Image 1: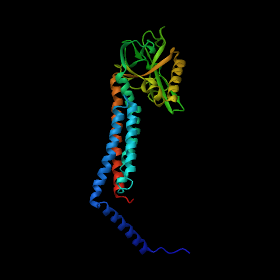
Image 2 (image 1 turned 60 degrees about the vertical axis):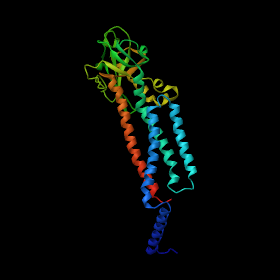
Image 3 (image 1 turned 90 degrees about the horizontal axis):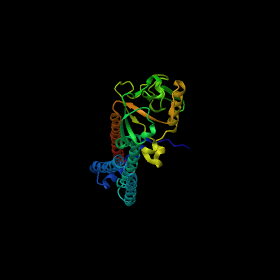
Image 4 (image 1 turned 135 degrees about the vertical axis):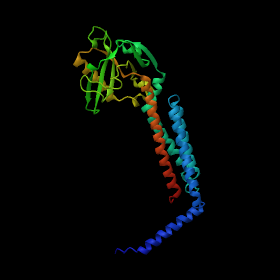
Length: 315
């Protein structure tokens, strides 16, 4: 038979629980130590997060195995700390977690920032720069190039651009040939086109190309799209390559050839047309720093909230 809830009994139970909680705080030093516990947990988490994130942003490109090993060492140190403090005060039992978890999160954030932005900045900073390049030159001659400065008679032919709508990507892939006086695409008898300016969602379907500095009459340089294995090596090239995007740009080139009768090389290279390719390169670093500071701010807020919950919450 169901019993009627006694409100006085509920109040009494709440007061007993509160008394037990206050007694527990007293056993650990009292409420005046709460701020110290919060600051200790917060400092431990921030230090672990900052060290690992710094390693990934500054050293992963040069010593990736060391960066991963350092993260593993920090995580194991946190686990060992947890085991050694299992019988101590309740907030101290969390110290190891406040080492291991931030280290793992920092590694994930660092990898995201690196493969999204920093890998491109590092590549273009070390790749070769070629100047006075005729557009009719085969792209294979510039396999080690990151930036190209074109000859005076080379230009981006926006009048022969196309936009290929990829249903699988849900985006319009844009290409426009880079030509000079001897290129077949410019109407003369000459070499096949092997260099195409490319972008996503910055063109119409025909003869309208607005990607990067296409509208700048003074633009005559470019940032070459690097092959995935040049960015991350064979083991990690899968992390840099989007098969759908790669196939989409190939189809865009085929569409451009079919529409305008352009002769294109068997292997073509895509590029970002620019007045100042170094500005495009530095943009990768600027965006990486934006990701970095945003990640730090979000983590600091989360770490402080977690430290406060651990220091005050019952265990």
